[in-house]
Length: 111
Length: 114
Picture 1: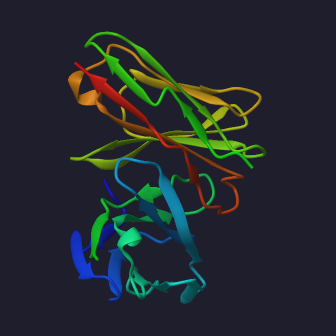
Picture 2 (picture 1 turned 180 degrees about the vertical axis):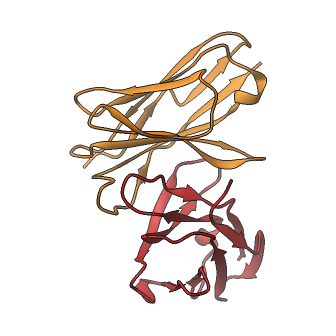
C-alpha cells in the first residue's frame, strides 16, 4: 500500500500562479522526498527534507514538513508551463527500508 | 556524469514469454532499486540491490526476479509474462541506502504484453 498520499490528485493553474501540493503519510520517517515526472518518463528528484527539518528551499520550490501531523507540502512559486508534470512524494523510513511513493499529483500549468 | 541508463527502452512481448531488463547505475552508485509503474497501481517497489545482495523486496510474485553484478549493473527478469505485467519499469540508483540519499531514475523500459 502507498505510504504517502498526495492531494489534490490533479491541479490546474495559470502560468505565474503558485501551486501547492500536499502529502500525508502514516508511519515515522527518516526523510521525505519530492519527485517530478514528465509524461511517461523517469522521475527527477526535486528536494529531500529530513525529519529534523521543518522547511527547505530550492529555487522556486519550498517544502515544509510537519512530523507531528505526518504531512508535507510542496510549493512551486511563479509556475511555468514547463512545470506541467506529475509530482510524487516519497517517504523513507530509514536504513534498510524501501522508499515508498504516493500515487502522485498531476499539475497542469496553462500558458 | 552519465545518468542511469535502461535498456531496452521499449519492448513488446507475448503472454507466457519471459523478459530481461537491464539497468546501468550512475558511476559510483552501489544501490539499485526497481519499480513498476502502472496507471492503476502507481509506482510499486519491486526490489533493491546493494553490493550484489537483495536488501528489500516488494509484494510481487516469484515470477519477478533480479540480480546485481559486481559493477553494480542490475537486471530484472519476469518469467511467464501476463497481460497485467504491461507497465513502465523504472530503475533508480543511489549512493547508498544506509544513509538517506535521493534516488536517480532512468528513463524506464516500457513493456507491453500482448
